[in-house]
Amino acid sequence: MEIEEKLKSGYKKIILCAPTGVGKSLVGATVSRYFDSSFTITASKHLQDQYIKDIPFLKPVKGKQNFACLKMMESEKVDNTRKAMRWGLTCDKGQCQEKINKNGKEIIEHSISRQDNNAEETVTYRIPDVKDGDVLSVEGYCSISGKLKKEIKIKKN
Image 1 (cartoon, rainbow, N blue to C red):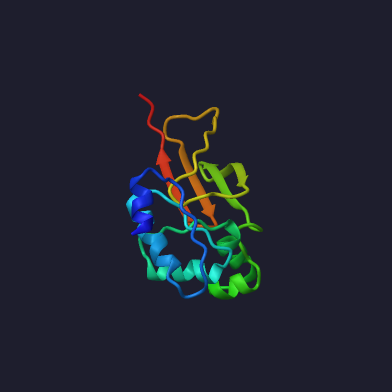
Image 2: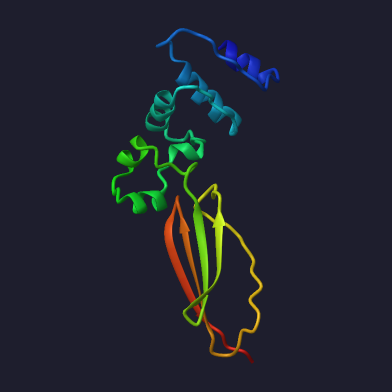
């Protein structure tokens, strides 16, 4: 009741400090729903994983050291992400790449130190001397979303 009164009177920041097992996480989740935008912060990865499991509407923000690097896994011949994490094959040590081919010949290779999400990474290249009928292919390798290859045939009007 006291928290609800404070929220209604205009408070925008709530800090909960209480012993283990009191229910801070559920109170925090309820307050989060009330605001439609909030942060729940913990120093423990174990507790963060518990929040994700028990309170599904909370979305985690994790650093790149929390994700296995697919490129490093491939080079070390590791096919299990848990093992990769134990071995330290993480995105903070890996590197994403893009390769551009024109008519089967590699013309550009670009390394990206990291990609923050698997939605998009935008890069623009100027490719000189492209002719009608040329085939351009782009092969991307991202440590979050894996391999992707696209090919287009140039048709000039």
